Structures are given as structure tokens and as C-alpha cells.
Length: 141
Figure (cartoon, helix red, strand yellow):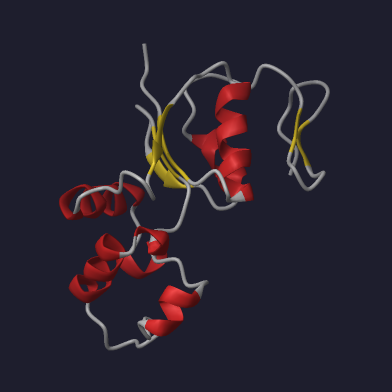
């Protein structure tokens, strides 16, 4: 049995679509509401490394906290960015999904399809109306 975890924010449409795609494959993931239960610094470092991304790639650049902390400053070190993300989990871009196949920051949500251990079980349309999985259960786009 494979294990799937999603670091999820239910107020984020991309995160909701990603969770729905996971469930459309017949998988009930472990859902980590990371704003309530944020990863530790070492867990965050491991997630970012597993994604194959830089710290800045996983830093959410929208919102008041990002602006207030002036995180757009290119001279800030990875350590400083990690400190900000640990102190303010809203700065962690989402959703991050972990499966036995890999770890991805799923933006756009369809990126989760590359790491799911099971195929989609039916058609899927994102909240915005974009068809991702067609009637013949094939990936579109």
C-alpha cells in the first residue's frame, strides 16, 4: 500500500484541486493542514530538497506577510527565508504532495498526476472549469 501526504490549505483553489485529483485516483491521503500543523524547519528543508527546488521556489510571494518582511530582497539567504517560512507558514507555497514515487510542489495542480501511484478513475474538471481528465479518462493538456 502506498502512502500519500498533501500539505494542504483548504482555502487555496490549487490545493483543493490537487486533493480532488488525488481522491479521483482512489487514494485517501494524509492531509496535513500545514497552517495549523506546520512542518519543522528540518522537515521543510527535506521537503524542499525532495521537490528538487530552491528555498525561494517554495516561498509564497503573494500576501501581506511576504511584503511586510521584504522577502523580495535577493540578498536574503536561504536560512533567512526558511526562518520566515517556519515563523509564518502562510509563506510556504502549496500544495506539496509526497508519494512513494516522488515529492512535488503541485502548481499547477495537474503536476500531482506525475507522482500518483494509481491512475485517475474518472473524468476531472478543476474548480475553474478546466477539464484535466476527459470522459475517456485520459489526461488533457
